[in-house]
Image 1 (cartoon, rainbow, N blue to C red):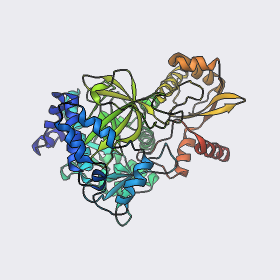
Image 2: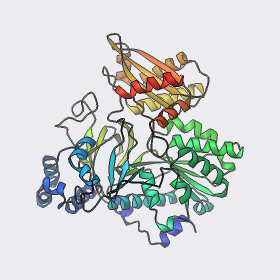
Image 3: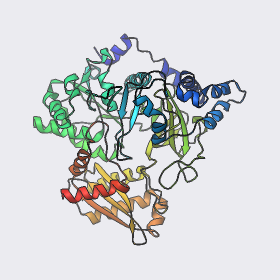
Image 4: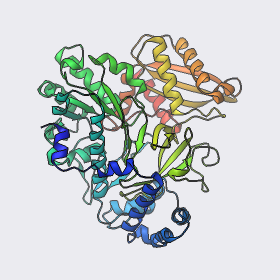
Amino acid sequence: MPILGTLLKKGIRIRESLEQEYSNPFDLQKEELKKLLITASQTLFGNYYSFNKILSGYKNRDPKEFFRLYKELVPIHNYNKIYNDWWHLAKEGKRNVCWPGHVKYFALSSGTSEASSKYLPITKDMKKAIQKTSIRQILTLSKYDLPAGFFEGGILMLGGSTQLNNRGSYFEGDLSGIQAAQLPFWFQHFYKPGKKIAKTRDWEEKLNGIARKARDWDISIIVGVPAWIQILMEKILDYYQVSNIHEVWPNLQVYVHGGVSFDPYRKGFQKLLGRDIYYIETYLASEGFIAFQTKPDHRAMRLVLNNGTFYEFVPFDERNFDENGDILPDAETLMIDEIEEGKEYALLLSSCAGAWRYMIGDVVKLVSKEDSEIVITGRTKHFLSLCGEHMSVDNMNKAIELVADDFNIDIPEFTVAGIPHGTLFAHHWYLGTDATVDPKAIRDKLDQHLKALNDDYAVERSAALKDVIVDILPVHTFYKWMESKGKVGGQNKFPRVIKNNQYDDWKNFINKVN
């Protein structure tokens, strides 16, 4: 039975999608925070931070009084603060800490910003919210020009192991593994690679298992982080000795991706395909399902405003963040009706997972106020501004894409570090490509494109930013380093900006493997 037909037959309602389509974003978000505050008002966190007093603000004639009280009474939290103050209690088995009930699951984050993984609570309500948003995204496929047979096919979801680690009071694992372990029964018919392979913890064994079974499946949609999906497709092509993935999966039409910018991988993907497919971006983080692309050939994503998450937006500038990307104590936060198109904001989340004014670490840009559409431009920690160059991950991704086009090569992985250069500064780039290239020619083109993309960078290249260094490495070097850190597969990705101890560790690793 086609998946869209199954959704409708099972009575899956699309009321939430229509509600967002025809409602004011401020009204939706105001109501969403109210629901969250009421639900958590009797938790340890809710009592400590006087949620009942914040809720009284909803009666005030001033429509923003509730938000003023919320900002006044509840502090901004980064991971270390909320974990050390609250989440560790839930992890130890205590009930009603930041959200009602017992937290049975903790997602291990990919840990690109810090060396160690984070433990992020996944409550029953958050799992339901993620499932509901996933269904909303599937229903948007009706807007795409897809053949009828497409909806009969399977969905391959390449994620972490569904065999979660039992830690006594909770289970831990990759978010994708937690979600896949408890898919609705009606979805099992469409889901691949199936329960047996999905449980596999050894990443190489999992990829080999999928490759062996690939021809038995009619796959219409693939879902996963670009680097690992590309590796999987290369393995399948090698296993069957075919020239493109459509010789194995002729009905493959859609690739759903997220976690990192797809641009550096686009050229490599095209070489593995027999024809064009739709690329659909999602913003599914371990903290929740935040946004997804709703229209074909439209790279912005619509924020989900009415499904368990309240957003605050912090202008990403020197008034609110220090040079290390840490938020300042008196940072300005805005609601969705107060933000402006074309400007960058760091996201704060309050959610049904028990996150409250939580700094997720991502930086987004509003591209459509009317449709609440955003693009991700980087991370609060993943930017370079040693001397005022203000170079974002968005700048980096675009420059690498342009360099790849200039030389007609694939550069799926890269990272950059800011380093001292005499009394001034330099950028040290590491580019992953298996092509034979001239590092100096690559360096000159990269520098040229960054100057064109970023005026501040251009100014500093004639002042304090004295050099640009480029090292070319085989692509597998990046994945071997991740493997050495136990961060293979699932939602793991290589950091685009590498700093401090990570940079030293990376240099030592390169010296050993070379």
